[in-house]
Every structure is written in structure tokens, then in C-alpha cells.
Length: 268
Image (cartoon, rainbow, N blue to C red; front, side):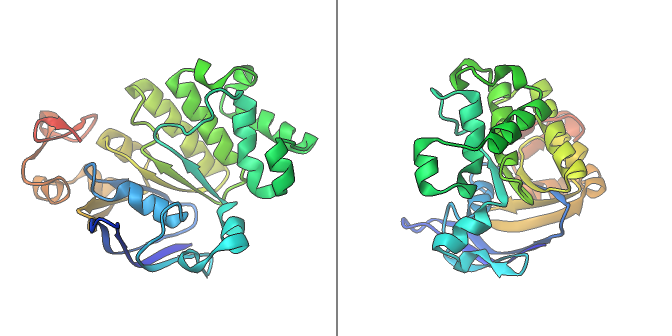
């Protein structure tokens, strides 16, 4: 179980990205975080795995406060937390298989990782991860030769190599068209249901939220302003919608199903 208590993040320039955020995520949940750009979604996910250090608060995962860890203890904890990034974060000139094997760096010695040496077992794991994501035939291509959808699958395969108990997905489909977005979300759903991996995923598109989330919360200006289930977000009224996205936000077509968020005339 993940429990976040009184999490606050204030950047050096004084920007308050998160304000006293509190929530619990049971094991096996598919939690989706919604909100406008700048609401704190990415900061929250990056605080959880300590890519960003929180200013205050606790991040209790399996009884351990990740916010207090450092050095080898933090490295050990991170091994079980996969991360999928909006812009893939691949080494573009390296092969697909090499990028996937990077997910094993937390399990190898510093010398082996510097030399890029991985065991036969790790190589077999990488090939199996690519097979699960349906891109095994791309293993020896350079990452920058792949389409955006394929690159994001490489990112998921890399996270899978960590044998994670939890995956944090930061706007994983923002760069993909709707068909590819659903395909990628289906892959995350399979990992959630079949592998019992807890998923925390930030999204903009409410049709994806309605389809894949088991629970939802909405961030606005770094604060949680909405909590609900998949069923509750399908029944969201205008007042709840505007609480998350602001008074000038609109739901395209007057409904939620299949619609994109808009605010101030632009994409949200």
C-alpha cells in the first residue's frame, strides 16, 4: 500500500507545486490523476519515486517512508518502482534491447552497468518483455527508428524489467494519437490485472480515465479537489468538472464520454 501524507513541494523559485496532499492507494489499484497542465501531476509522481525531493511530508510505501531514504536504501526501493515518461526518455541512438536492459541497472553492479554487461538471464527477460509488448521484432533497431507508439512500448518494457510492484506513468499517451493511446493503456491495464502491478497514471483525456481507472483524483493548483471511482467520474456534473479545471473550462460536446478536455480555448 502507498500512503502519501501532507506532501508539499515548493521549488527554489517559490513556486508551490503541491500543497498538503494526502491519499492512499491500495495494492493493485489503477489510480488516474487528472488536472490541467501545471496542476502538480508530474511533480507528484516524481516525488513518489524521489526524482524530485519533497519539501515536506511522508511517502509511505510498504511501511517505509521513501521521503527519508537516501543512498543504497533509496536505490533498493526504486528497483520496484517503474517509471514511464511522456517523452519516452530513451537513449535514441542505442538499440531497443539496450534501452530495455537499462531497466535492470538497479540489479547490477556499478562496474557491470558502466560496461553495459548483462547476464543471459537478463537478456532473456528483455526479449520476453518485448514479446509481451508486441515489439520483439524491433529489438535490434535503434530507438529513434521506431514510431512514437513503439517507443513508448519500449519505455513500458524497460519499466517491466524492474519487476516492479508499482508503475508511475507520467502522461504516457500525451504524444500518441487516440488509437495508439488506447493500445498503450490496454498494455498498462494488462500489467495491472495480470501482474497485480499498482498503476499511478496521469492523464488529460477523460474517455481514457473512464475506461481504465479504478479510482481517480483531481489536482488543481497542487491540491486534491476531487476524489472518485470510475463510475463517479462518468457521472461528474459541471460543478465538479469546473472545480478541477476552472470556471472557464468546458466539456466538448457537453458530455464526458470520448471527449477531450479544453480550457481557455486550448488543449488541457
